[in-house]
Length: 80
Image 1 (cartoon, helix red, strand yellow):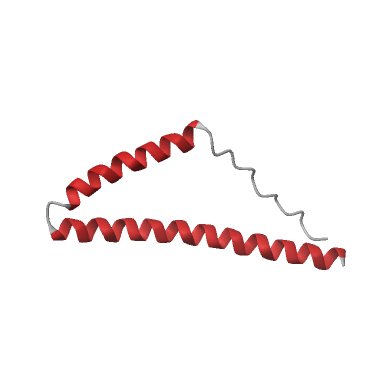
Image 2 (cartoon, rainbow, N blue to C red):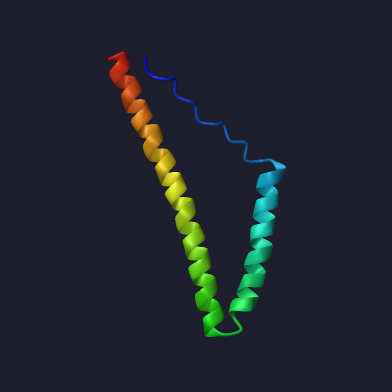
């Protein structure tokens, strides 16, 4: 018998951690922009760091999406 899959969490977007992360991101983005405007090397370093972090986030989102689609297909095959 296959193990029972864990359901995806129900996200609550209007909570303190989400607003805190948004505010912190804006604050850090403002100061990162000021720092990066000082010279070209700082801009390159900042761009690479944020591009890597953004890529990691998109990778996580796409992996979750792919896994959830496979889970749905497997469940449909079992029912059908």
